[in-house]
Image 1 (spheres, rainbow, N blue to C red):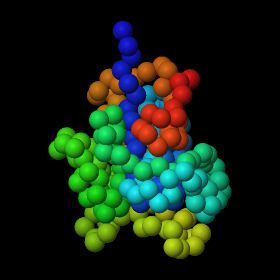
Image 2: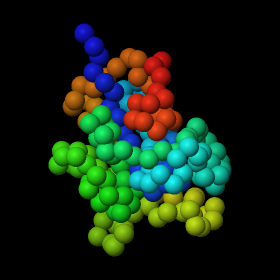
Image 3: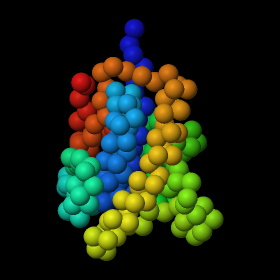
Length: 194
């Protein structure tokens, strides 16, 4: 009998070179620390094709490295057909949220899309843009540091929600690992079994 598939989470921002690869790296590290590696797959994508095939922005890499997060990233564009295999699609701002929900083939798929900062108990849920992680691309290193702080603040709540969903669904597998998908043709592309 085949083991159930791992729980799959994909972080999505605009070009997949700043916010979403940072969120992917942070969340993967938290998942490994919580012992969820083997039960969870984490990756990221962008809503547009502008940076497909590129690595993460140098400033994102510098900030992740300074905070001891590993990353090995190749940008790619999110595709509607991935919804079928994903359990959760995490948008980095409300523009991404609306774009991804509009792209979703079914209402069930649209319901998989959530804002990252909705998992941060200290985020201002009532403020305009209060749940957005601002795009640091046109800013400096301080903007990337602020972005990382917002991602870290939401990661604990997201991890709790994912762990609960994994337990509730019975998704588990010995062979899956928490890795980065690097090819552009699906959420499982580039993943290897342990």
